[in-house]
Amino acid sequence: MPLSWLNAGILAWFLVGAALSAKARRGMGSGVIDYFLANRTVGGFVSAMSYSATTYSAFMMVGLVGLTYKGGIASLGFELTYLVGTVFLLVLFAPRYWVAGRRYGLMTPSELLSTRYGSKWVGAAASLLCLVTLVPYASVQLMGMGYLLEGVSGGAFPFWAGMAVAAAITVIFSIWAGLRSVALTDALQASIMLVACCLLVVFIGGFLFPEGWGSAMAARPDLLKVSWPFPMFLGLTLPWTFFALTNPQVVQRLYAPKDIRSIRGMVAGFSVFGFIYTVLCVILGLSAALLVPGLKNPDGAMAALLTKVPRGLALLVVLSIFAAAVSTLNSIILTLSSMFGRDLVRALTPLSEEKELRWGKLLIPVLTVACYAFGSLKLGLIAVLSSMASAGLMAQLPVILGAFFWKRGTAAGAIAGMAAGALVTLALYWTKTNFLGQWPPVWGLCSSVTAFVAVSLVTRPDPAGGDFIETVASDVRRTFWQGQDF
Amino acid sequence: MSKIEKIWLGFGTIALAANVAVPFILMKNWDRFSGAFLFWCSTALLVIGAGVYMMFRWGEGGRFPCR
Image 1 (cartoon, rainbow over the protein chains, first blue to last red):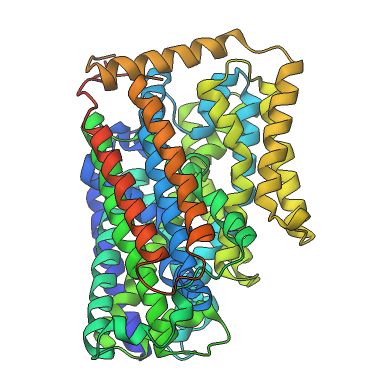
Image 2 (image 1 turned 180 degrees about the vertical axis):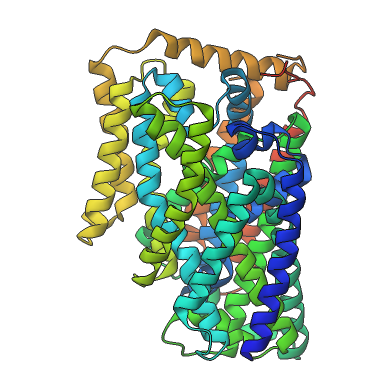
């Protein structure tokens, strides 16, 4: 694809996004809750599209397509298990996070842990864990853009330039109007992602497989077999199944809907979006395996596939992947910056709301540069890097579950659980050790659960923790199941 | 946790376990769309449908004096 087409397309897309950001800025008030949670007034449709765009990143059209290209249909199971897990968890936990956010005035996921366990150090530890693990995951978005633009331009758009453009747009969309801007641009981006993916599948099915896609697949029946080794499937799937609870950029979205109807719209809309988008991406991966076989780098499958379609459609798809990357990245950066001010800086020193907001805004460009630097290292397969980050975040899982359901859980136990899980996971990934044949996330989760339970049982729980659990349970029962107000 | 949430918890746990176990135990060698592809799509749609049903049983409360 000519460089001028790519430049013009990215510029046009950026201008539309910038116009939406400017519109969002006009409605912005003051204060951190307004900046990071849009003052808890986001409607159902925007919530659904924004949650979808935040969750589904460049990984889908680059990493998942590559994973399917390389390993066949098992990638569908991997991604749909994630979707099933997310729907399952959101129906249970979205009400809990939403009422806790309002009842206690919470802004970040880590703040909920601090409140529940009665220690600011629990929130600080969770925030630190998120900062360390999400930088690689966010970098994957930039890497996806770098690979894609380099691939479709035949090298004219270098890897570093693709990453730099995505990083610059992320900073602009995030810093301008906080979540109001991010949510609105996400909604636009989610629409582009779905439309482009649908059009690409329709074109490929209609024009590149004239005898029918099903018949063409008969030439590669091996792609329809579940060919992944089970430990690999479990190792990749386990962290993603709990993504909806452990990844702060999506958890924070549970504080933002304006009412219960909006939460319902968010979860239902995301579920439908997720199912369609996942199946389409897997179909694209299978199609790439038939149309452009023999690629050395599976992550280049989408770029290779785009050489088979008209330039206009290819450009739209490239922009949609760009949109997916930026929408995920800006949400991660925004959430991490809110956690930095609220959970880390405020744990060390008292901070006015104005200064907290300043710290948060300062971190947006700093984090983006850190992600750029990490992405420049070009470490590993995109799918594996993404899953590794989620595996590190999974160290929070027992602590989060304990926050809502286990009164005996203590602050010391929570910190020990997160530390043990994260250290074991990172150490096993670092040394490339699959103990007893299982991938690091399995052992990370076991360590986290063991340390959390053991240390909690030998330390004294905060009495207010039990009150938190009962208050949230009571609020959920009254507001969600009995239709009462707070 | 309410009774309906406990039912959802059991249903979701079984669906997740089946989503992992069934294709790896029973469909390992099926090389057709009626194998793992169909199973995973059906399970996902079933859980989404059940989730939407659950959410439509939520009330419309939750109004809160501004904090």
